[in-house]
Amino acid sequence: MSRTRPGPAPPLPFAMIPQNLQPWPPVWWVGCHGGAGTSTLARLVGFGLDFGGRGWPMVTPEMPPTHVVLVCRASASGTWAATGAVEQWRRPGMSSLMKVLGVVAVAASPRRPPRIATERLQLLAGWVPHVWRVGWVDALLAADDPRDVGAAPDVDALRTAIWQKAQATWERKQ
Image 1 (cartoon, rainbow, N blue to C red):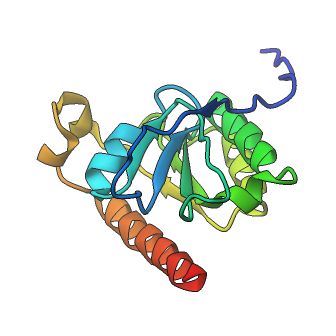
Image 2: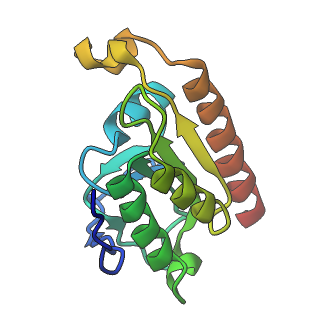
Image 3: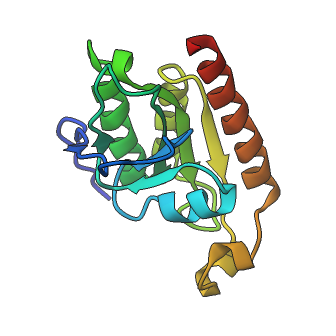
């Protein structure tokens, strides 16, 4: 099997924030690509704004602290998209407007992720404060609402970790 080398990692677009957004969300769930799992995670975790695959929230220095959790699938294309988003965030100016708390890699199948995805996640772990992994849950495929299935232990741990990171950053800013 031949592999093609991808071009430059794709950046995320910027998207308008809904007007009169009240209250300001403690976390923005941002998908690095379509189908990353932001909607499911936001529902299971129970806090934050599902900003989905729209891109980075277009924030200004006058806005409250903006905490972003990037979400990707643990696949070659998903981790490549996450690489592009993180590279974009690390550019001068972006990281001063929003804090990326980490990247959540959602299992793309019940099998172990491909080696390339694992290697990219290891690389990303050196660029962002944390990389979390969320395993495959078959029951979610048949659920109309992921809350009907309930949160797996890795999602419960994710909820706690992200809430603590967001709270600590908010307290430092005040």
